[in-house]
Length: 241
Image (cartoon, rainbow, N blue to C red; front, side, top):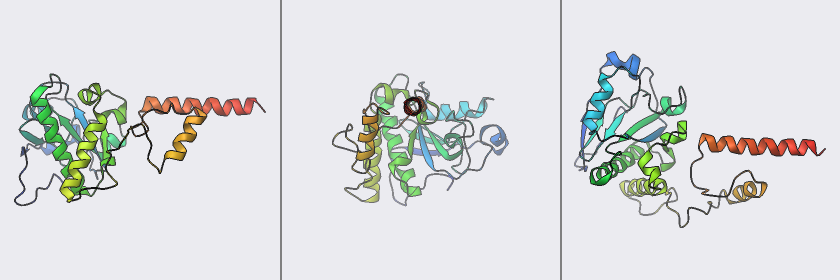
């Protein structure tokens, strides 16, 4: 599938525009065929419209690229979902090679236009997930791949869990399901799921994790801290023998 598919008669709150890069730019902007496995959310960190974001991406000579830019009116696609984009900052990693990059516009100033752009992005992403038969666990932040504070507005406002909850809720609505186990909505984000509770308590007791936010994603810098604690624990065990 090269793009989002809309069912006949379905009404979207935005207009989908195809503004695809020419094949002559594939070598620079999108050199590899791709079978997507994730959706990666970004904030643009400026106040340009979706069409202007795509136009600038197409005309500059940097390899940076992404699949879709979404604002308060349009979802503009620049790269087919069957080709990669350079948007995740992880080199040849899965962010760049296996994920669909979605830029949410107007994030610099925020306000009404950004709120509407974010709502449109949530709608769009839920449809992408449904199209591929994925759950909300396939949604990643730019930060997950590179550690960058992106999507900056979502993180700065402390709404990461809220946004994923909204995507999950909309996905379930699209599927015609009122309730499901795949939803990330939880009574308390500080309580681990039943499946992972025993392991979570063990890791806390051993001091490998600090016991906060069990349902949040793990950044690379946090992972490095966990590795260091494991290493120190192993060294202490050997030293005591």
